[in-house]
Image 1 (cartoon, one colour):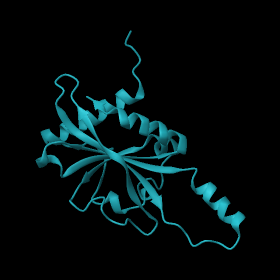
Image 2 (image 1 turned 90 degrees about the vertical axis):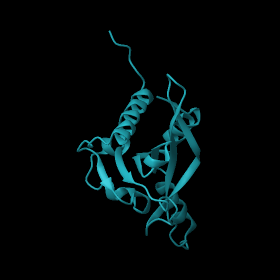
Image 3 (image 1 turned 120 degrees about the horizontal axis):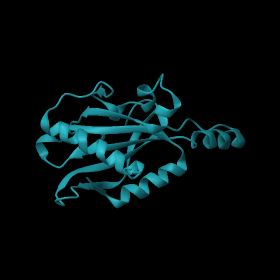
Image 4 (image 1 turned 30 degrees about the horizontal axis):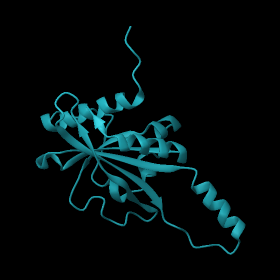
Length: 173
């Protein structure tokens, strides 16, 4: 009987497989969305008609990354902000650095303050319940950094803390 693996190790394998596909110039599966500019779009545009499980499990996107990616003020409704530093993705067998992972949080733009403090607190409470998170995976070699894999998903605030704890430990593939 095969031992049960945790979700994190399964995700590590998925990312490793697709990062290797970038190196090998292999064609991509259909379930990937292609986008030129995930960094300047509201994440809801990618998930407009998706089931709730897809929102929380996330979707992987192959992104053509340029030097300006992630350095903009975002879109009308908000922007992506980096949380923490780049984390290494290392080979378990050789210890060689394969790539990096970066975590972004989508910050919604603040609306003008209302006159009624109670209403303002209520709007903030509802808005803070959901958090969009993007995990960006890129290879270490400079010639392949034009392509990255991004996983965008919708989290509640507590899972965000859990995800960041896992982010701190680094990755071994």
